[in-house]
Length: 337
Ligand SMILES: NC(=O)c1ccc[n+]([C@@H]2O[C@H](COP(=O)([O-])OP(=O)(O)OC[C@H]3O[C@@H](n4cnc5c(N)ncnc54)[C@H](OP(=O)(O)O)[C@@H]3O)[C@@H](O)[C@H]2O)c1
Image (tube, rainbow, N blue to C red; front, side, top):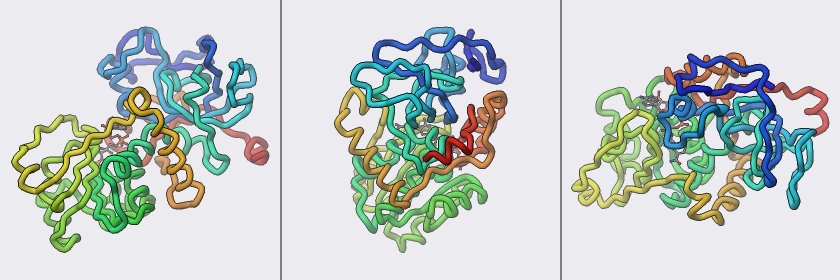
């Protein structure tokens, strides 16, 4: 089978696709999944070079998020609720390949109305944004929410979730094209280009001087955003896409009566597993009711062109979720849904 195998640590642009890799071996609790689409993440680029916190032993197949079907030749562990052919999504090291072995209990059924391309980008981004806004910042209808990198993977999900929950959303991003994406696909109410000096004044003007009740920040713009946060505002620390971990002056936190709130979705599995199904139920309800819809970047890459997709992500060109399509779903398969 095809697999993007990291034999020695290197930038993905230096790695070639293997076409004769063996199928992954399953453990007693695992099933084999035929991957149709896999999501691209910045951490894939870091992991290939050994620069990410999670360092699988060499050799390993790159990739994490995926959507696909339980393979026809998959073992079905005792108690497993899936059958060959069932549509699922999840995340497991090794998703840039035709097949991946994954614990069946970590999979989520993929609703028929969601394509494999859309499903491949859900597993990390959507619960991160939902739990940050709802579980951590306690969003209320009518709140002003400022989302930085609003066209990015987690950002566009945050814009949609906040809108679906009745907030007024200000999208901030680094170009007019990305702001269009946040407005068109995300439904943002207002847009602000954060490459322009003094952009915080725009936010204050839009909110009639009130400021943003919630700041959702995956970039590392907390210090800048505190200039336009509301009294008792909540600033959500989601990530550091800009490459710098900020040091926040604590006098600002005190003077503005604000809360700095962290969110690490991956830690819910060991720390608070009971919350995970609640979050997924809420997200899947939003999809089924049409209040939110996963956004896929316009250029979909083949597994052979994976490196081009990762390069586009690295160059900051992509928006929504960038995807590599590994297997095409036939019209016959679609017709059966
Ligand atoms: N806390 C959690 O549990 C959790 C979960 C998932 C992801 N994250 C983190 O959230 C961050 C964003 O993830 P994502 O999936 O949304 O990524 P993404 O789709 O690649 O979007 C990141 C966006 O950040 C902006 N950006 C600003 N400075 C940048 C720079 N120097 N290099 C690259 N991008 C830059 C870009 O938007 P503009 O061009 O508009 O500026 C870019 O599109 C990452 O740091 C990720 O690790 C955290």
